[in-house]
Length: 529
Image (cartoon, rainbow, N blue to C red; front, side, top):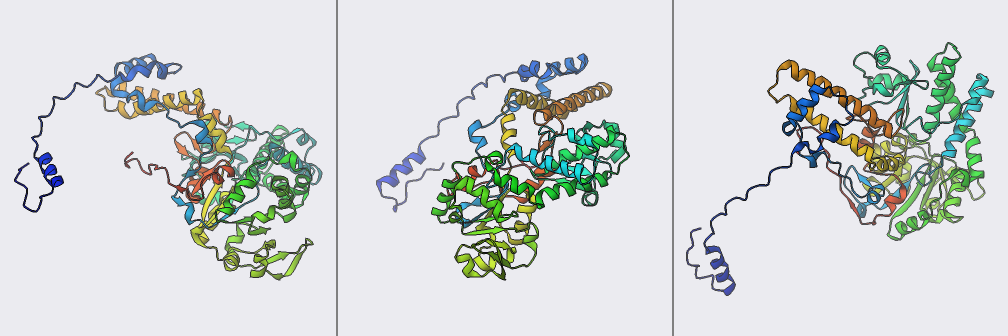
């Protein structure tokens, strides 16, 4: 620093003190402290090798080169937030300021209302009876029942081959999830059906496959597997597409005939999960200045029975608009007027107008365009919360630019599993083996020895990956991941929603002024951490 006398304009005491400080001689740099020796990377090695099936020669190689093959132990430890905070958390894909949200809309099923497992049992039994009584299926089907441990959300059923399976975000087939009936197919059987590429083109999905993406589809997935298994066990020749059509007809009858709705409405305590704080939270949202609306594909009578159970007889006072029989996702694309439900329960012949909205009358049918005309609600001032990615959430983003939030009930259970010691052990070992696979090739080893070690490590990685999914579901694994891939469902969740959480109450518990910021995720490997 070339210290010159301060110019004449710097005459204040503060300025002079500053200049003296700047001109103070800089002390010589201290000798660098000796860095403590790094803890050996192989301190976790016994845990990593314990229970492995690696050949002794490969284990010896790993032990000898552990410093080069393994990252520091801290990089292999699973770091998770406190369980309570994680279970209640709202996860963010895209930044959203709740100050900018003036209107919050809600789906009914599996959003405002959460159902007990008894509902899946009911849907399965009613659909099974339809097959037995109306379509004359073999009496042995009567012995089957809904198995909650078998299906997960996000499966596809191939009408050509009669198999249930899980797909990755790139439409690759997860071979160890392919089931014909209740039997998991061997890898070579899957190759025989789909070829070495184990990939399904998008055109084939839309033409030949049933996507089972919501919680109501769990009973359908289970029934599909059971009727295929019945045909196999009875040695009855069958066309999988025909069986799928029969099951689809049975499931549709359960939902459209009123049989399901009447049973649930008559005994909501049997089928609905209580939510003691829901009414208070909705009221707090209204007091903060938010407009609230309910939009459901269900009839008013069905929604009314559930809302009375949860919120009491005056539940409609919490909502500025109530829309029933919306027929989503067609609601978002068509141009149809609303009709109005009278106080006596019949639907008027005339179109709904602004006065009907102002008086809080129940709207029937309609369209997104008409909702915007009658209310003025447009763009990201509207946040819509639902459970079905395609029916509820994809189209309002595309057509109107609404912000969207998904309620994913399975998230809670999967987060709980990730706190177990068994999960942490699998995760640590998988990270270690993946690190060794990347680093091994930089060692100066004979080609034959290197390739043998890589083959053994790849086999060990596959073994670990086959064990870990069973923590979530013994047949299909996690809803969100399979091995190193995101599932097709997880990809759609990332694509179509701004926020997601396991319960609506988690979202409503946040301040109406909260700002949600996305957690940074690497899109490509070259992105910085």
